[in-house]
Each structure stands twice: as structure tokens, then as C-alpha cells.
Length: 300
Image 1 (cartoon, rainbow, N blue to C red):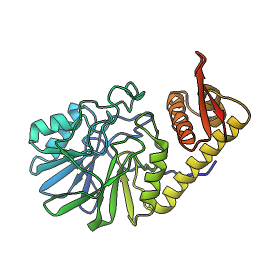
Image 2: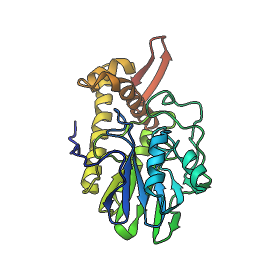
Image 3: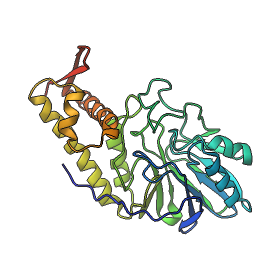
Image 4: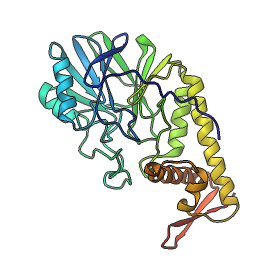
């Protein structure tokens, strides 16, 4: 399996709005976990009149810390990379307190039909942006302008935002330095995810700022490692299926021998996403569900 140079050193403080780069500050929510690392990093872009990117979970303390820390400034934009429970719910109380409009690609792509609903990364089905943006659109405020970069895969509505003046990109959950990204069908799509990774790899951003964890300061090489890792995982699935039909529950222990129990469900869902990718390529067929799970067969 391809090695990924993960970044596990993360310098932050809870409850404090911290400057992290020129024109960028961050407030970290107290929602650490297996999918959020130390918590959601809510970014503040600009000064005086600011944008808030990924306001975070429905946590009154986090929202109040954000409002208190920006009491002498104006929040003019609330921007969301995607509508998972650790990213978008705080947009509602923040908007109620400030009147700022929300921006994002759109609501969740498969409302009510995603296996992620009850996971930590569950869906915020209530989120729908006031202003929908698409790939190449710009969102601008006082002394800042963000370019929208649509990166479906983790979710169909996942959007990154580049601040080209400062040669950086807010990468949401699409690229994170501390971990790979879970892909949860049906809204999560491995084919789209690989395409979106390649899209970012071809960009020239000097730094990526994920919503969780530390910045990625060598994006091209890091993203290449992510792509190679995913392709190696898909190759391993292909090799398993060449030995005979398999269920996802049969494959996960072989594919993830050292995985923590809390991550087995996510591993199974990412395996399903890879199998669906191989189905699109015409290499795998899903057979009838036997009651113990769908059997997958390699067809070449």
C-alpha cells in the first residue's frame, strides 16, 4: 500500500481565534473524534468585514466564541464546504445572530438515502445555501475574493475555496493532512473523488488549509500520495475478487488488518465506494444479496 506522509502535529488552542496565515484566522470547535481529529477548524477570512468558512457543529459555545471574538467586526458571508454535521449546522445560529447570507454548492445530493446519516459525519439535511455557487464562481468581500473549486467525491456538493491572492486553498474534507477522506455512497463517489484529487493536483496552490488538522504545505506531492494510495486499495480489492466472490464484510479484515473498531463501518463504506468505482469500469458485478450481504464478483 502506498505510504502517505500524514501530518499529525497540529498547533491550536480551543476557544481562541488564532491567526494561522496572512488574512486568515481559525477557531477550533470542541468536537474531537475519529472523523474530526482535534475538531472542526472554522476559518475567518479578512479583517473588519469577514467571511466564515465551515462554521462547524451545532455547538452554542463554539458559536458564541466566534461571535465574541468577532464582536468588533462584521460577519458578511457564511461559506460552507459541504453539509456534514461537523461543518454546516452552526450556520443557522450564526446567520440568526448576524444576518449574513450562506454560500455553498447546494444541499446534500441524496437526502434521506445516505448511510452516513447516523455516523459522526452525519448529514445536515436542513442545510441549503442562500446563494448557490458552482465551479469557477467567485465570492468576494472587503479586501478578499475566493474562487469556488467544485470537488465532488466525499460528497457531491463538496466545494473548496481558493484565495489566489495568498496562493492558498481551503480544502474542507477533500484533502486532509492527518487522514484519508471517507467516501460514503450513494452521495460519496470514488470515481468523482479520484477525478477531484487529480483536479487539485494540477493546481499551483502553495498551501491547503483543511477543515480538520494542520495545513498541507506540499500539495502536489501529498495529493499524488493520496491518489496512489487509493489506486493501491482498488488494486487490492481487484486481487481479492480474483480469488472468488466476496462480501464487503469478508474483504475489510484483509484490506484493513490494523483498523480501529470505531472505523470499521467507515472502512466498509469506502470499500463499497471502491467496488462501485470498479463496477463503473466494468470490472465488477454485484450479485444477489444472500441475506448476509451482497456478493461481488470480478468480471475483468
